[in-house]
Image 1 (cartoon, rainbow, N blue to C red):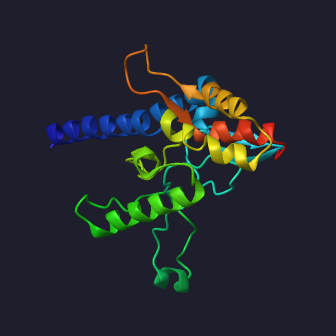
Image 2: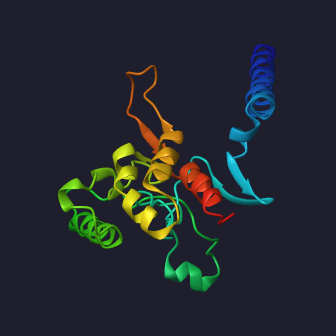
Length: 207
């Protein structure tokens, strides 16, 4: 019996100790470290305009204003709740997520077809063969704010036509917000649409 109690005491103390370390000390250490050294990132990389949060640097949005660059399809407002949950009061607002359609799913083909048509309607100077694939397809998470440089460049004509900016000024904004390959070899050059549109909005006096 004494041997059992001794073993039980050791196991109990070890369990409590690990609960304190893993359930309190470690999370608090990570939280404190992130708040001190990575404060903006730990709090969502929020972007404020005139004291109001308008976006996150790392979450794409469905920009529809003809004066702004449009992002690839975004799932930032994907609804994971059913109509029944809405009627019963369980609905708690929009959530991020994605449909995750398989390549063989006809719904994916239809969505991409609709995206292509919409893009061509919005950008009549762009030919079908010149539309970059990323501007009409969602990213893996459905939330990425980045598009290829080519996807930004094909929208220049529309931006120029709907603002007082010149072709050179719009291209300069794209270049300013282009994130180049890591070490010049890893990844691809890409443009953060959220930051690009923020600079564009300032340039044309929207904010």
